[in-house]
Length: 266
Image (cartoon, rainbow, N blue to C red; front, side):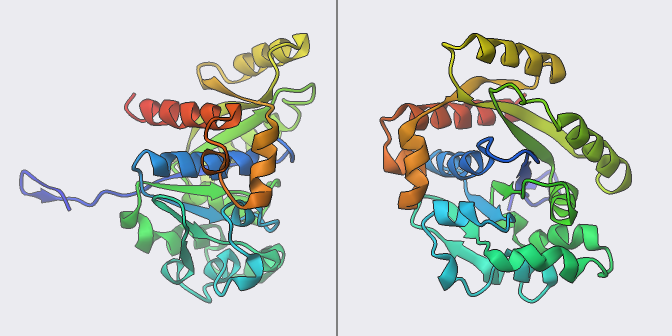
């Protein structure tokens, strides 16, 4: 615990929500692989899977049937975040897992007091243990995502390089503005990551230009290519840098993690 000039302070994790209400954009792939790459770069990271599909949980090799305490239990207050943390086999990577119980969480918490702050309050006791907490959000703008955005310092938006890429993003940004006004005055856009990138297509270049207009100065220079090994890795329960470190997907996510960290110093 650092001590400076008579002031004692505690380093807290930066909390980043990874979200896009449009499915199939590489949201979970980004959450899992950013977490693993940050861990490999000696950052202590907690990935909280708050998507009922539980794909981040599977992507880190955890059997959903074996989970005793999941993100559902953390949100509903049935267990502490500390008791739900799973230490994975990957360097510096911990997980709060998800299973299908989470699909009923919105009904379970809808009448609770301060329902939008349940996740933030639950994570507070573990903030000191990590450099980063990554939240893999559901592909919707419901109560779970509201909890994520209330708990987060920033939000990261993966966007697929395809024709309908910007569809729904106006709604997402309007939701964030409302949350900023009502619940979390400090949340900011971390950045926008272009996924499933194929530079050979004219359409890709057009989409990239549109996204850069929509999010000026917030689009990462690193892009994530379409890559077979990247799509195979989750079925083996491994982040891409452990599944195939020499693949284009692994190199891209390593470069993205480095760019992500570089921007923390800006």
